[in-house]
Amino acid sequence: MSESERTRITDGMSEAELDARHAEKMKKKKAARDKILATKTVEKGLLIVHTGKGKGKSTAAFGLVFRALGNGMKVAIVQFVKGKWETGERKVLEKFPGEVTMTAMGDGFTWETQDRQRDIAAARAAWDRAKALIMDDEHDLVLLDELNIVLRYDYLAVAEVVEFLKAKPAMKHVVVTGRNAKDELIEIADLVTEMEMIKHPFRSGVKAQRGIEF
Image (cartoon, rainbow, N blue to C red; front, side):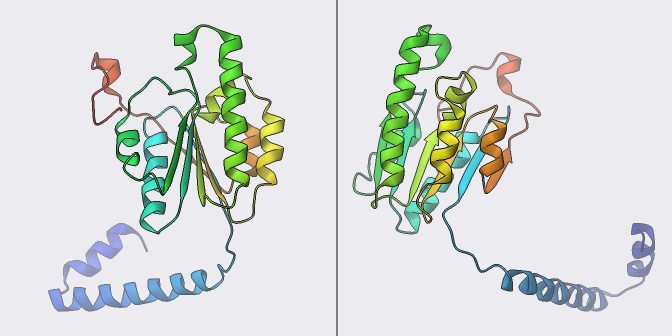
């Protein structure tokens, strides 16, 4: 039935009839939804990737961090390239030392350091730290913030990272952020979200805003 046909039918209905029609429609939708949910029985730690050119990749990942904390989970965060930034997220999470392990291993963005060997060394140190956190028995979720950036610049071998993540503990959640996610990482991920940029204030001359960008 087309939208115009549905409109013609509902135009002559009373509010009570519309309410009854809506209730019946939602009842059928709930039954179909419940049937689908009944088939979803697997429990596992997820590999989640946030990528794309749009803003919000790390922001969404930190949202998952706060959700995990709200569910009594312990979280570890390794920031690969944002070491020089004093972010609002970091200030908040420092108030939860017993639940959050946060490590900023990067020396800043690659165009700031202008030292490839230094960036490679920082990436390797961050990755070694990340592997230890992923394999421990203490943390339930590990966020690898901007890992995609160091993979993009080949500071770490994507094959090494993929093979390790494929063998992570079964119930450990791992979240990876950064634009230009490698195809090999996307292939093994359970959940991949691509942020698309429609508009950004930076293009209109607006600098990064405290509380929004950092």
